[in-house]
Image 1: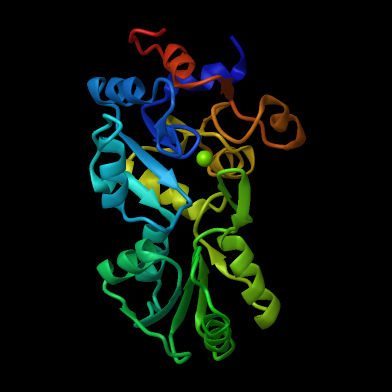
Image 2: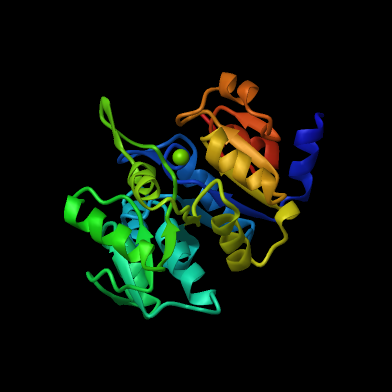
Length: 272
Ligand SMILES: [Mg+2]
C-alpha cells in the first residue's frame, strides 16, 4: 500500500468537485449516485465545491436531484457563495457591491445582505463569469477599483469548456480588469484556500481528515493539498494521468472513476 493510500484511512468527510466528477454536462458519471448514497449510509459528512459562480445552490440541488442525487443547498459551496462569505467576514465589510457576473453571483451577494449597485462609487467589485459583459460595465468596474473599491474574483479560470470549443472564463475578465487597474484581486475560488476552508468550516472536520475529490490537478488537487487535505484525482474529467507528472503537487490517489475510489475507501456497493 502506497503512502497516498494510507492517507485515505483517516478520511472522515469528503468534498467533491462537480463537473468532471459527479457529472459531465447533463450526464451523471459512473458511480456518482452510488458514491453519494454510500456517504449518506455511512453518515460521512460531504459537500460539493465548484468554481462556477453562475448558478445558485438551489440550481445545483435541482440538477443533482434529476440525476438521483439528493443534497441540501448548504452542501453546495460555489465560488459565488464564497465571495459573499468573504466580504461578509471582512472587518471593513462593504455596503454597496458592483457585480460582474451571472444570476448565481448576484443572488449570493443579495442573500448575504449586500446592496448591488451599477455605480462606480461601489465599496467592492466582485467578478465572476459574465456572458453578457459590455465595455461600459468593464469600464465602470475599473473606475470603482481605481477609486479604492475592494476587488474580489470568484476564480481565475481561463476558459469555460463548451461543446467542441472553449469560451473565455471568468479569469479572462479578471485579467482585463487587472491590466487596466494594475490591481490584483482577492481570489476566493480554487486553487486559492478560501473555498476549501469554507467547505471545511461547513463540514466541521480537520483538513487532514477531509478528502478532496477532483478532476483538475491545477485547481482541485493543488489547492486542496496546500490546505492539508488528502486528495483523489478522478480521470473522468479534464486531467489525464499524465497531467500529474507536470505538477509539483501529486494527488494521494489517482482513480478511473468513483467506483474505484469507493473500493479504496472500503465502501461496498454493486459495481459493474
Ligand atoms: Mg471539475
